[in-house]
View 1 (cartoon, one colour):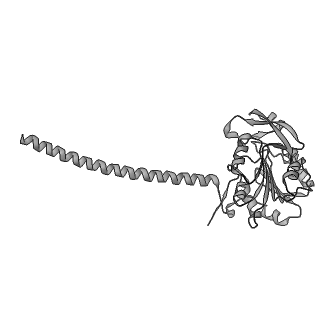
View 2 (cartoon, one colour):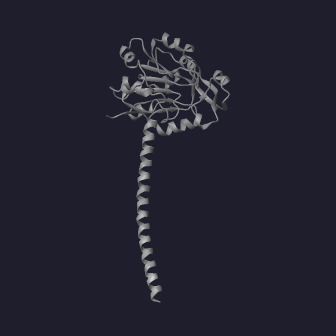
View 3 (spheres, rainbow, N blue to C red):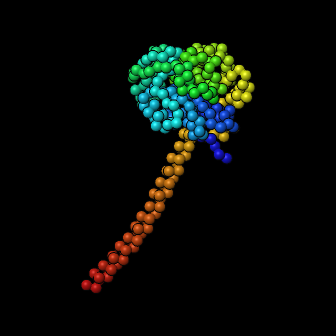
Length: 279
């Protein structure tokens, strides 16, 4: 059995695949795209020929996106309810690269946001008008560390109608839900809530019974998937086994050489003893 590799942080790509795997390549919008490989909701789909718009204000992550996704539209900016400029707050800790936001409220609750860079700000509506090409998008993912409401306010939902919307629905770094701040906007736009996976909330159109059914449960063993971290661990284990086998082979060869040297040493010692006796 072939397992699907999940690259996403919480297997969001596996849940979405249930709805989209039977169709050909589609289109996505990834707001707060992050790294193109690590914890990416869209990597699985990009590998299958999907294309879309990635929005990422972090300059380091944007550079990786631009290099790894040449056929996507990659935009180094933040999104809000109106265009302009804003301060992007992020952690100094390189291991916490995903924690970046223009939400001053989020920053006020977390003293670890110590790095500040000014970034361009646009809106979801402007992006769709400029880059949408008049074609529909299949899914939209929003992960902006507490700025979700502003992003949702920045578009006319009668014009942007993705089949599925995935929004991070807890306060950054916590289990505290925050969907009460913005969910009413999606419900009023004709979407309904179908799944909370512990991190994100999934929404589909009110009339879309198929999507509501297929996206009603989180990823499970029935989805026949494997997390990319497990794949990497297995590959590392295979490499270690290969290295161990090579070391064992080298050790065996050295043992044979040592045995030959021991025998040769014994022969020389015997010859020396015989010579000494003869003299």
